[in-house]
Length: 114
Image 1 (tube, rainbow, N blue to C red):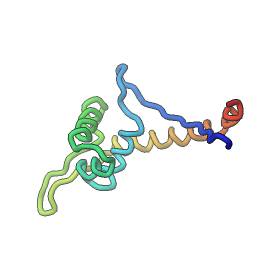
Image 2 (tube, rainbow, N blue to C red):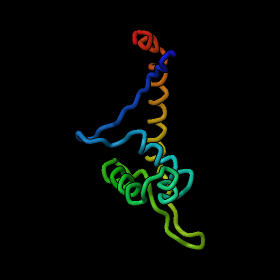
Image 3 (cartoon, one colour):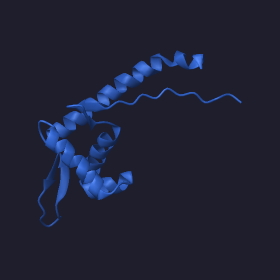
Image 4 (cartoon, rainbow, N blue to C red):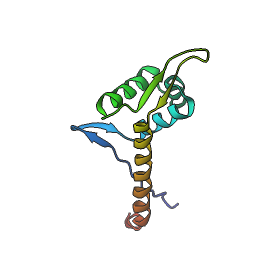
């Protein structure tokens, strides 16, 4: 039986020597944008609200501008949305992912050496 070979690329963005942004945070921002809620985003990802909130708080406090803001309540209740800075970061992250995936795809020959 032939082995299944894969080439996977993952990366993280570090700020001041500590992880700042990666796949998990990108997915969290996408879920927040889709659902308008940190609680719903956390549920969709199978994580606690506390963990999701801590991730959002960390990004907001360390980035030049917040990525996520809370909307005040009212008839429809409150909510959460991405800022322009959050959408830009998410877009830039997705673009870099596509470029890295293309590079990895062009280097698949390395798998033949296994």
